Amino acid sequence: MSRLLTSLFLLSFCVSVTLASPAPAPATGVSAPSPNFRNGEYRALLERKDGNDIVFNFEVKDSMGRQIIYIRNAGERLLVDDITRQGDSIWIKMPFYESQLRARVTPEGNLEGVWLRHLVSDWQVVPFKAYYGENYRFASTNTAEKVNLSGRWAAMFRTLDGKDSTFRVGEFRQQGAHVTGTFLDAGGDLRYLEGVVTGDTLKLSCFDGTHAYFFTALVTDNGHTLTDGQHYSGLAGHETWTATKDANAHLEDQFAITKWNKDMPFGFTFKDLDGKDVSLSDPRFKGKVVLVQIMGSWCPNCMDETRFLSAFYDEYHKKGVEVIGLAYERSTDFARSQASLRNVKQRFQVKYPMLITGVAVGDPDRTSKTLPQLERIADFPTTIFVGKTGKIEKIHTGFSGPGTGSHYDDQKAEFYTIVGDLLAVKN
Image (cartoon, rainbow, N blue to C red; front, side, top):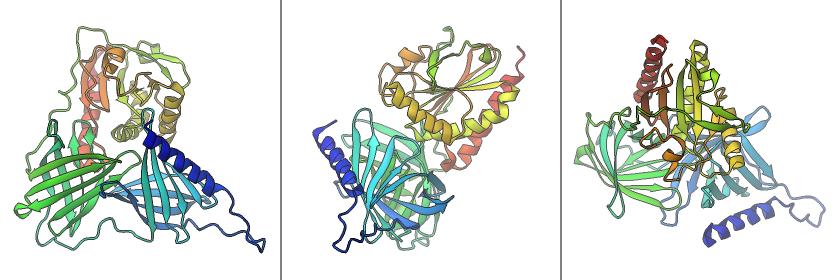
């Protein structure tokens, strides 16, 4: 951990402990009441040093005698129900991603604190504020009569030094000044984005506990071109982008990205969440259609796929289908990986085995160490379709979540079709 991050983390921890300690009793002997963490809507800011704060919204409600939070991003409502309150301090733990918000409740009912995200070994620390009673994301003027950004966009993202670039497909929906949508890429999509068109500027943002994004761009050419695009992420991430409206914009075939050696036997053995060895050659998988999900608890697109596969498994298990999750976590610490994956398993009611590979997602040799039959693990998630003979039949890279609309529905239908065809093959 860097000296700066260490100092910030220790400061945030010490502040939390200090805030959690009872305040000295007034001379009257009556304890001062703690500020109330009120139910209602909040507008939150993750404060970057460059001033390009990442904005999101959340709502606090009562449920079963306790408070819960829904983080709002366009059509997404992310439930957060692990909330601890002590004095005027509050700890809001995200359901996965090893991420939490720590703050104090101000006398006005606002929040001031930090967002903590556990990386490989460091904690990323970002100042955080939330304002009670504010339900807008960005201030705007209605420009619907001037431009409408609804449709598909061919977008190019570039690093600031211009050495690397990524092609993505934007899909936006605009009503009045309000804009929602996402960017699709090889890994799936960049989450549920929400924002506005105001004047000649597009603003979009999202926060889901791990991804914190803020996109801006100038709207030109009567709403057919987006220029001078800026993409800010997390504490200091920054890249540029441009886009052109293009109804025919499309990505590479997701079944053609990950290649494999068809002459090499496919198999693996890893430990499950209880520390027991599970192998693809175990009797429970023999003669079955098996979907092998390459994933990680840090990956939002993986969470989208896990939600889908959990329901899919419940429907198709009795028909002769098995699913295995292979997790590549941020670290090789088994206990840390185990805790993160148990949160995922509980949240999505996963009944299929989730295995810990013991190889970190950032390991450049992750493929050769775990699945040498694959040319490379190109992105997360990746789904391997294994036929009844134990051979790989198809590999799908990425997963387009519900935020992509029809792409999500088409992808689910494609999964059902592939599995149906594999089940129809005679042993």
